[in-house]
Length: 369
Image (tube, rainbow, N blue to C red; front, top):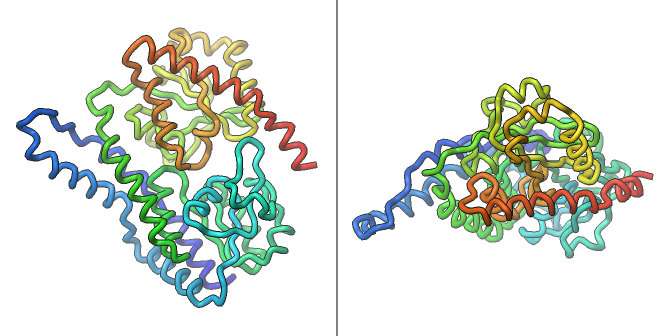
């Protein structure tokens, strides 16, 4: 394998920015009165510094890997041939104004318009490596959640790769900064980081003075489900919103736990998300809650506090739709009126209906025939 590929392998393991979120959300609110106006500007600067700290990349191996990759790209006689193997990664490339020679297929969303005529290399979880190799890529970009499955396949062909940490918005922003550095898109990358900085500075104390509900997050797979911790993207959004994940404290993104153990956690709210094939998953969730008697003993079920999350907003990878996702969570975790509660339920019903009508299973079967 090429030396730069080995360096970027190390890079992928270093992009772990989300751990700082919980401590930064402990900062108090500033009172909105004339006496506090003198410190408002200073606090805004502190908030911006908080974000800068979250996004600072100071690991020597990581910096060396980025520098080596940047030098390699700069030495090329033409634009690098890049393949993005997931929709989230393709969206980042689009925002960075990067051309692609290969892009993943999708069954529930739309690939950015600029890549409409780009060669399709297969699904995010299982790209067709014959097609990938035939495109003679200089770089393959994928989400780090699939690294263990995809890295051995990439090692078999003569190319470089990077696995992007899309397990949180901060991880996404750090990855964007590094891609901007490598591919000479610093200005575009900084604009995206500035957008998050502005959002986070305003949002960070939104729920600081509210009681945190205890939340159980179920990530559905066709035929089963697992528990999402704060290390997953959905879990990181719940944490950003101030919710208390009842399975916080693990090093893993997901856990396999039986319902008896879930009952001991007694969550206030149960959130249901989908990893893939949302039509199958939502049908599975609805059937399980209706037929598995143990759910009827959960206070969250008794109190009608089970919500289905919009598939396009709460997938496996961070996206630029994080403000919309947090807005959806706000109504669930912190309703301020009966209207908020009703809207949260409507959103949940719409999410389930959209998933069931997505046609994802049929589209997937057509892709894999």
